[in-house]
Image 1 (cartoon, helix red, strand yellow):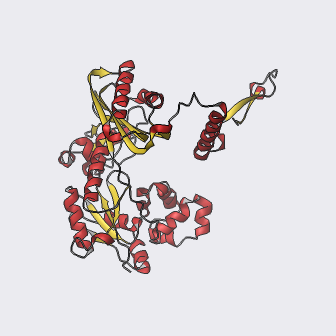
Image 2 (cartoon, rainbow, N blue to C red):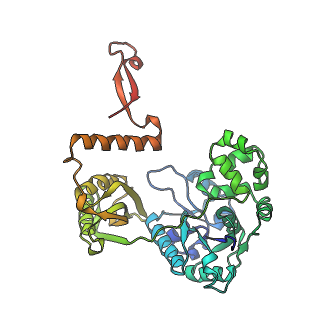
Length: 400
């Protein structure tokens, strides 16, 4: 049986290059992604020229400008990044790969089934991936996802990095690598700072720590980080092919408020009228806008159940327009994931009280599973006549 060979494609500074208009703009001087409007003033990805001044992603805007007064800020373009990343992932799928996409600029796929198509070896598969992407990319190959990501981080733009296949050899390969590589995995991104304060600076030192001690200090992420440092990881989860339904509307002038709400209603009606939908429901939708002041805005909404009711879709999507940081000149709605036909769709308000109560209980249960037991509380009068405000009322778990 052939051993698993996972290929990792890593495009450094992907979001910055898309927002800046290409990698040529990154060579013109120190560049960084500006903080997103309405959020904390932390900069995003930075160019190599900016790093020479000590500027790094996650730095406060004032400190970044103090270190590099000539730093040029580029407004974020989340919608453009998502579109370009979907295009590149589709290019990898076009060569026959079953791709698991990570954050924009990072993807994995298994090379075992592709070797017979591209020269019979991993090098042929990597060359085909470079041709499919047609952008500067760092590629690594290893038996596990994290090891392939570590290899890709050490690779060069034109030469791939291949990690050894055996468990002992793979662990020895990962041992001298810095602990900062755990930042590239969302589950372990918060660990490196704490581990470095404890004097753990390499993956080999992490792999030597007791599993029970890591679980006691860090919870589930501690043993996971130890397994990653030892070359063990979960299997790939390739994305499923999905149809893309999209509607866009150019606004004649910078729009906000009721104008945006009417535009959103028109996009929803157009989306539901598309022939390609064939009566099926929508599981999730992506709402994005091009801003007048530059940059884009994007948000993804997953419906509690697949639906095709325009009124209910407006109830869910319209409040999202309040998050727009500036007036928009273009609005776009995209369907992600189609469900079964809408023949059994019923209005929530028209359902019997027992069904509404059951749905409400399920919603509370899901909210508590994500945000904890305090996600749904009710106010209980305890001592209304007390002179101490804290004694008058109390919060208690709410049960519908």
